[in-house]
Image (cartoon, rainbow, N blue to C red; front, top):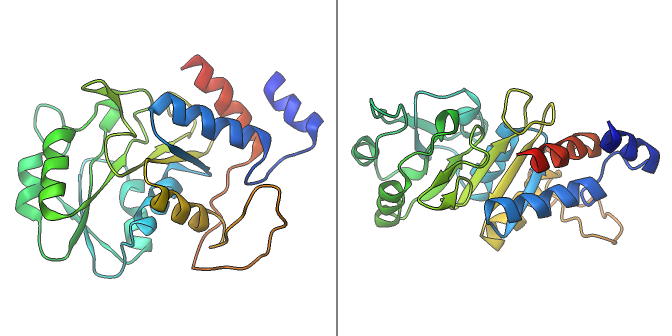
Length: 234
């Protein structure tokens, strides 16, 4: 209540570099152990930013799990890519690395493992397969805030990741999401995708000049304030 009231009293309710948004991005990066975090308005939006930052488009195939929420594949379909479903491991219900390898074709562009119910997918063999075939790895970490795989947190295990801040998650802001990466190139592209394809810099006037097709995937200050409190509790 204090956090939300503070936003209202400041009278800054939105903005790419608004105080609560910037604080959330900085603190979440530190928590996950990545260089960049970008707050979005949903986990599906965060994943779509990753898909488009990777240059995935019409006819490209992305291998993922069939045992997941539809938001995993929504961004692929919106970008005219093709979800290809590998089988799951019967013990973990997460994607089976052996099945991933069987599904790779010349059109495969990425692998999107899902850390289902907070249990990380088996990332070492997944990353090994991706490296061997030159594929991008996008983690669906929407349910996995704070989950750890071999000493590293989910969201830092692939090339990019997407988290959800929906009210059903263990870290929630009602609605919202966070994109994470260690790649400057992917982060800069995701920033454009998040705000109508524009490059927006702190303390500089907005030019309203789109450099690519983008979306309105911004989070609000009220949601970010809630998320910052939730991060402290997490």
